[in-house]
Length: 249
Length: 226
Image 1: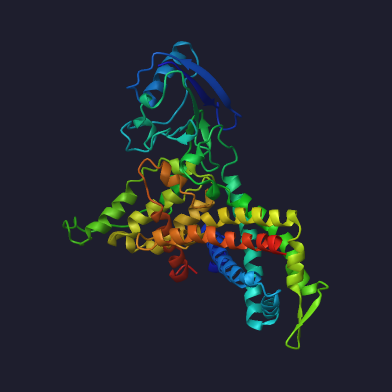
Image 2: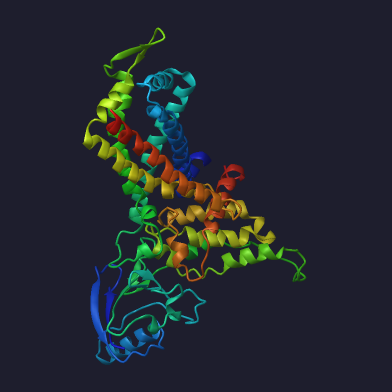
């Protein structure tokens, strides 16, 4: 395959940045999108140029590290992670536009790498179960109906990649935050702290400068894990009931 | 900050205000369209004028009308506040965006649609609401009681093609706004469940079509019959 890559280049956060076009040849349709970028970077390195910086880690679609806004969609044309996107999704001669996630809460570090630690701070504010002490509990000591376990697990499949924020016209983090609130709110272990959790995580989400939800559904449509909008409704219920009944006056 | 102000200044609190005021305005629209169906009665406006007097003098209706004004103002103010926050959340936009593949046009343009509806509302209130309250209206008498003849003002206004066209087009924008707003308000309230969400969505789509059509038929009916 012969392609033209229109890549966002930005030296650092203070730099204005801009698009640079790179022609690339000899790309196999079996390559993943990241492997295609590896080829580009090898060529750039050989020429003595600065390689294109992009985030990646497991390359198995489970870590949530890869990002990239490809041809107008987060993670590109397929509903998957960029590492699981293959070049067969493109045609020979295509021009591919590659941009970083765009959100005030996700500042660009360099080129296509953005700082997603805003998500970490939302988790740190309450997305956990505080203390487990004593011996290892027996399996099935606390019975949880299969349907509830499944629903909590569906929410827990969120890998925190930030595609929801990237896709949302308001750069809202509600799908992410709602998945993290939901996975714990549905389980007995998480229910103990549910009120404080909802209040703290939403306060942190607001403080990070994410936008509000317009219920367009773009987040869920682009989520590589298919996290459902029902989680956002659940988060809203959790929050409204928490502010009405928590001890936090 | 007290817990109330803190809640209402959070993103979710502001969304709650948008949803509640929006739902109240949907209730208002339902009442407004039902009452105005009297325009189709063909009795020279008698029933409509009696209804108009009731709507401007009845104390219970007064309370509802003040709630409606508050809802309109609240809906607009919070839309501006949220809109600014949303804009600030993405200072640099994308070079290329295929948002039409993941969301509806109406859902992405609620602010634009709302602004057009607001402009329409100002013109609409100036034409009829202001006239009914403070304008110099001709008077009519039914069974010995005097009524303001709002019907004559309405029929006169809709002799004008531009006015009729403007109203019909504005109702098109209202339809798009409602097509997203109706179900979206329930989602914001946290009411999303497989048992009733499909019903809410279906009712929302039906409502977004039927109410604007009924409203749009009023100027068209008057234009073509008088």
